[in-house]
Length: 406
Image (cartoon, rainbow, N blue to C red; front, side):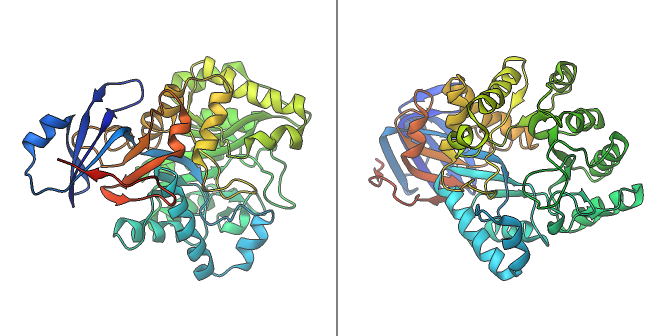
């Protein structure tokens, strides 16, 4: 498909060049050219369809770096997954993928599903069979017997052989990355507490070694301070949650944070759109501590990336801007928040040079938003058009259609 989209301005990347009266030429799923409307119009045949959004901004598509498409965001996620067959799960996952696309998400990293369903949906979206964002699928997360999210099928007995075998099984099933549950979590009834380590440093190093052998990155679910330290030492690429829990409270390890920064490890806090309810859940003081630690890490130079943990209880799929507003609440400027959801997220996922920027040769993952998201993130709630891999998608409830280009 070929298309020229023009708008009041083109934001090539957060904090980067802005082209007033800009246009983007899309061809075969890739950005073919970016420039002023006059420049692009002059270079593209008149027969190519054009759409003009004079009061809008064209910007890179957004990346949600932490979702679980197999989860329904209900209060009994584990039970629902266990009681549902694959056909039922896939039906729900397809709808959730479309909901993410409606909110401007053009790439997602699915960090745990059952039976390779996310990879199957990934392939269906890539072939054009169903609408949705590009999916990077981790497959079954590696966990201990009876550990966090054991019901997804990634249990190992802790031996080197069992760990390597599980990584290889995920790779053979088409995984795009490896996910390991370095600590427990709150989702699994009867499982280890969120602060408890599930693997020691040696076991985590086996995971990262085997993943690298397959050319894949590793994401570590880690709430506990000891688990975070072990995951960083093992060479993971991203830390999920990174809440620094201990049995009696919290302990931020400044030496480990320095190592995170020095080693270029990305941190995805997993701030769901429901973050405003956390003070009522944990208490005002504890929630303030949790929020403050995220801002402190940002101030230390930790590269934070956006991710919603969509699918876990109360983490919905249809409000990605609500998740981004968490970081604005912490005092980060909109341009930096957008960077977390575009260029930095692309780098964390190994997609730098492919997406997260509007530039020739990049995948045509684009948004058309009323207003200017760099000035006000609320503009992301007024999307006119989404392109994922060059395929146009008009979000549910989108405003007035584009006028024909000239």
